[in-house]
Image (cartoon, rainbow, N blue to C red):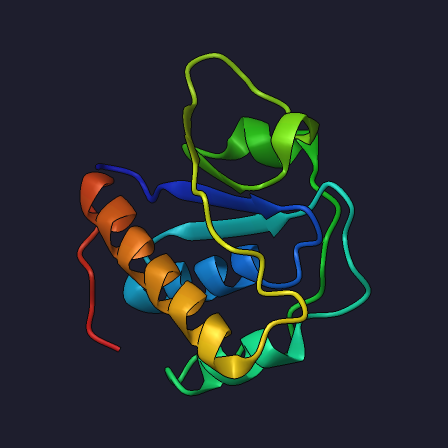
Length: 138
């Protein structure tokens, strides 16, 4: 890809799955992608268990803030990855859309969130490869 791709990760509360995916996309791309994230009903803070699970991977998402999904973000993205936001996500023709079926880590223990985290990592790695982005070790 000649230009830096933009990826938008969306989940309902923008407090767990989408924030973990965004953290991985930034880290595994070495900063060569623009990463956006949002939620249809943003929460008040990032899931502390998701923060801990990502910290184990050397990725700090503790300063992230849940954001309301913006139509302009969808318009700007080359790839839109949804994670359980249903019909709340706007769709524009010509965009790459994927819906990743992932367990919601809200209220789950660290062992469960690690499993979700690892699933997200493998999906982000695959997405980056499909977008012709070199995956860097982290």
